[in-house]
Image (spheres, rainbow, N blue to C red):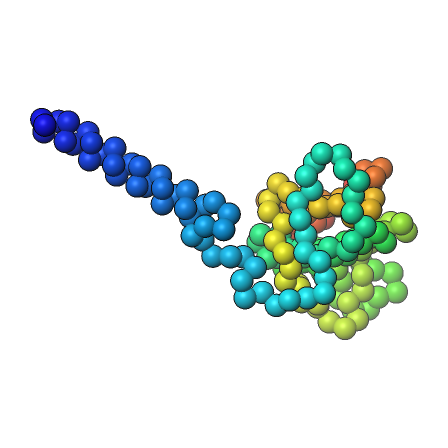
Length: 171
């Protein structure tokens, strides 16, 4: 076997080994740490990605956290409640509230708004991670996870976007 052919075979073997290691580390249930391992069990069902096939939205409540860990949301047929740990936007004024505001957003049949934080700044609950680009639906409400925060809307497209740098009421 010539030296050039030996080098070629060696490089091919190394590339195959690298490919096997990468696949083993990235395929579900293979190699990498289980994101659910060590998580405390709660009675709140975990979020699952919407299959996007137009199937009816489930009515079971779900809770999820964005991959950054800065935003967590709870969804039910009654609405959406999201908590943000850290933000850089100007804290909104909540009518009749003399406490802090800006960390908790609610969205339901009555509309979108921030909640008064009479009991202090809430902690962001840990939940199932909703990957960037994935979405979750419960009843008429859908939330989508993105690198630009979370966007939650109802069936008519009304809702909000919440991110560390800003919040926006949709339409």
